[in-house]
Length: 265
Image (cartoon, rainbow, N blue to C red; front, side, top):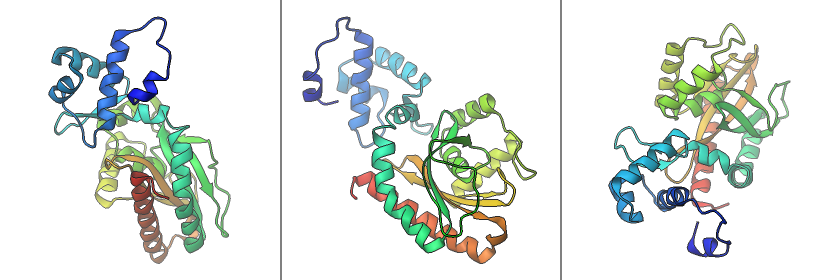
């Protein structure tokens, strides 16, 4: 929030200083192009390091900020992104992704999806059916489990392990078909493979006879904020077709990421 934005609003009747300090920290993190450490945030906000740490610890607990496990610095969290979804994701992301989704449908003639991780599940933001489309259970606005969908596995693979553990513990690993991964250790290995490959496969894991290939969409910081996928009946999911779909989906995801990062259309 800029000073101009703030000045246009009336002061709250009951001002909460701690809440104001928290938003000052969020402003600094949000306007930065890289994660910020406690010392940096303390210097830039003028707050003591102890107070800065306490506020960050609370913001991290609520998922409003996240801490990079490697350098221990902070960046905006998934929950903040989710709270802003109606204005940002469902408008900007869908708009920017739309031409690429249409391009995949034209080139692959299969059904494509755009989704984000919301409340531990896959939330479908857009769906385009191809000319060869068959009945698929997904629909815009619907939530489906993450562990057994290509989109979900991409979104989980690039989330913090702590968040993945919380999702598994809270939602569980329900079995939908004989191919569904219901073991936590095996799912973690699958997510490792997704990170290494750069895309996810769903081979009849949520619905018999349905396969899927999904790839990540990133924002300007490189954070995965969404995923796109192509769904295809298992009988058409040949080795040759798989190679073609992987190429198209990963290329389109990269194009969307570049547009989403720059805001260009």
